[in-house]
Image (cartoon, rainbow, N blue to C red):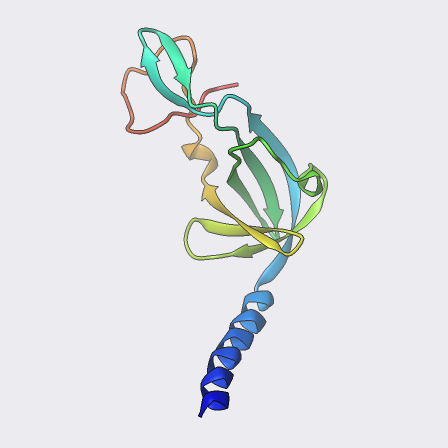
Amino acid sequence: MKPISLAIPALILATTLIFATEDVQTAQVLAVKKYDRGRIAFWEGRSPIYDDRPFYDITLSLGEKKYVVRYESGTGYYPSSWNPGSEIKVRLHGKGKMYLLNGAEEVPVGIFNTRAQNCVSAIGPPVVQTPGPQVPCQ
């Protein structure tokens, strides 16, 4: 009975891996915008206080479409294989999600609309406060 109970999960895993690799596509990195200081977490008067969690906006060309994805990096690490002009493997995953492949590792990123990249000037807080951290203009 044990060999059958081990074979079923192995079959499911193999099937999942086969279908997961089928939707891997090649994208070209067009541009990378680095936010060294992270997002504006809050304001003290007219001075922004940053969260110091670096992140990157990566512009990708995938077929006829262009995507802006946000790669979060708590340490500031950015893979050198994802520099502008490079081709990388990606996998679309549902609405607003994508995985960038860095070797055998799949790194989850969020897809952002370029019009949704409204940034906040570090000169002063915006007139309309939005909930959560804000993206600074650079």
